[in-house]
Amino acid sequence: MKEANDFKTESDALYGVMKDLSDADFRESTQFKGWTLNDVLEHLHMWNWAANESYVNENSFSTFIGMVMSETKGGSLKPFERKWIDGLYGRDLLETWREFYNNMALTFENVDPKMRLKWAGPSMSARSSISARLMETWAHGQEVFDHLGVVRKDGDHIRSIVVLGINTFEWTYVTRGQAIPGLLPFVRLTSPSGELWEFGSESETDCVEGLATEFCQVVTQVRSVADTRLRVSGGVALNWMSKAQCFAGGAESPPEPGARFRSVK
Image 1: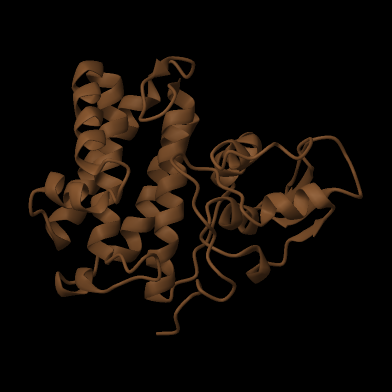
Image 2 (image 1 turned 90 degrees about the horizontal axis):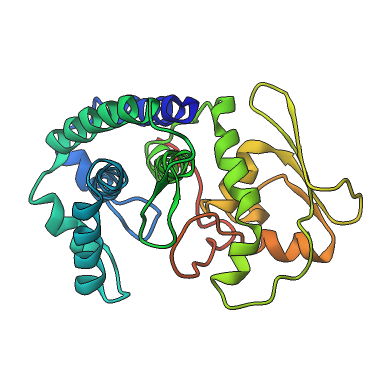
């Protein structure tokens, strides 16, 4: 499954900018909710493990999710993640995360893409599951790249994130208990390699146009749409881009304009 290799590629890119950090560096806070670099890896590693466990041991996964729900009761996941990681820190956590994502990618290469896997919310296909891990790695990787002052060089494998963003158009409203305002706007994006990606019925009055990377930044809520060069027109498109959310869970608000940016080191 190509998406498994894409997940590994994105994980490798994040590892590449963290591999020379010292243990002390992992205590530094990012622009995302004050999470430290260690918090980012705790989150990625635990949910990678959960997605993999859903495939290799469904009963174990169900027990794990039951514990998550019982102990968090709809509140912050961070205390549970810190408990689950059991003191793993810094470079030890980095290498543990790396070893696991490599093995997970190999496992998912040979999984039937259409196989249904349990998750915290509705079940999803194996393809959607590994694509979600790619999305999470890319999204949380952004706060790491920003903190370290590094410009990320995206590849066309981010198409999977774009597709998640398109497919969760309605979810943006469902998770807020709001009526879906209309049909998916026309989306025309330029990929990192220069290809043109188009979604929806062509329209010049209700559309989103621009770079695929910036579209991904908006739907993963790592940038305010106001901080991108996306061209957004039409009532539905403007409303969607103001709160787009391609990830599961309760409604989350995008960052305020100017709140997320690449640091200058």
